[in-house]
Length: 253
Image (cartoon, rainbow, N blue to C red; front, side, top):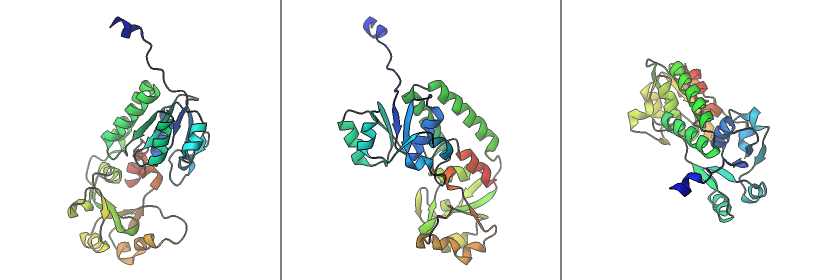
């Protein structure tokens, strides 16, 4: 006991690399100056990242083990669906890699902010960020129900209540049509069922440049005849479980 008492606490990592869009943003929100040295290339894409302007200040990586190893990190932060071989190779090279699952609920967002704060030795910063997030949620989340809404994406997919998009929809005061068909996660939903359910609002993802056949279903005239028509969602605020979902919630209102 006496020996343990005099051992120094594990020092915070000084050269941190994030290789996942969502961990990029939480790390940028919490890291001390100079502590985070690289984020993924997606973090600088304004179509995908809510912090694209801030990401420009960091060296970008493309999730390749060779490039990350040469940065001499003492901590690498990855997402659950990050390239498995990259994570395995970095660990074989003796580099610490921490993996974050996607945050699909308010509570999981709060948990991951605290986890990131602990990894970076930035617990106080994490608690301050959480306080701001909780205050914003109290102000932004709807206190009344606004009707029924359907989330509808390319290839006819929808998101249920156990997804980040479903969480945003619920916080904005909408009942999710996906629940009428027993869909809790992400699944295909025939357009005919969307139309027959007569939602008050249909929310889709932003369209990307080019001619994608998967997105053609979103232009179907049957969808456009629904009560409020189609509202385009801002993808970058919906992609990751970060405090920026407050903007997505506010936009729906």
